[in-house]
Image (cartoon, rainbow, N blue to C red; front, side):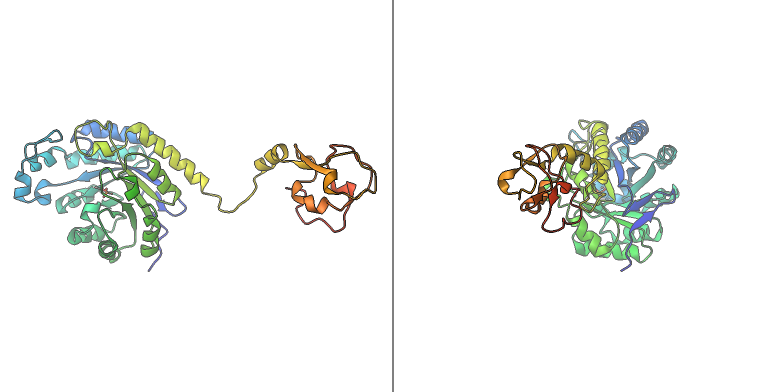
Length: 363
Ligand SMILES: C=C(OP(=O)(O)O)C(=O)O
């Protein structure tokens, strides 16, 4: 299978191995169907430091059966008396989406959307987007996934509610047309308990499909999403809201602006923290070692020619002499000259039985 390390979008943004984690504010339908709220959410997401803003698009008629549309939908989170009317009330028009795309891009953000049915996909494609998203819900919808694939635009595929067999099918559909695909590990429980997140699954997906892998999080906090970035997630997508107490089922499992900003800051911190892979001692640590580490000192006045024993030596800060890592090499050495109590041991004061190993002066 062809190994895909990264995917580059038309705007030049590259998502994948060796590139900053692409953080996405999933605005979804948390704009409540209101253009001005959506625009404000883009402002807040940009201020929080994300790279992408994501919307959802549905067409009630193509999404639901007549019966499904007519089903009563009452309760505190309802935006209409039937489920069809409720869903329709939460939609933005495609013209509004076009304006939001232009607005997002003017701020340097990647605008993209998940389309949940054929007409919505056609409308999103008419917007000339540079990136598409297939929601976890639609991963098993072979005819829709095939249409996404035929569009030949980079696509993010989310894998909540799916086992590997379902993902195999969707990946084969997409890869029949192109390889610009990014997988997101996801558990579609809203909110998802931490013990069901399974971040190590990202590595399993990476190995099995040889594409960049990210994380679509539905947990309440931000710790697991930050950890996902530390484990190499190339995308972290989180549902976003202006206020968790707003009407609607999604808001409680979404991040408010301050949380989103904190998450972005932490992701950038951990990205730096995992850059160095080998155990190296940095110059600043050398300075710290000088102050914090001890050296060997003489524990009493001693004459020239004396052969050193444990009783002649001890260790003290700061490290202005031979490091105690060489304790056994110093034992048994003879003194070239007389020394004083608490004087740091220096190599040139000693006649050694055998030469000191390389790097002796650095510990
Ligand atoms: C619900 C969606 O995403 P996910 O499956 O990643 O939660 C979506 O993108 O519409």
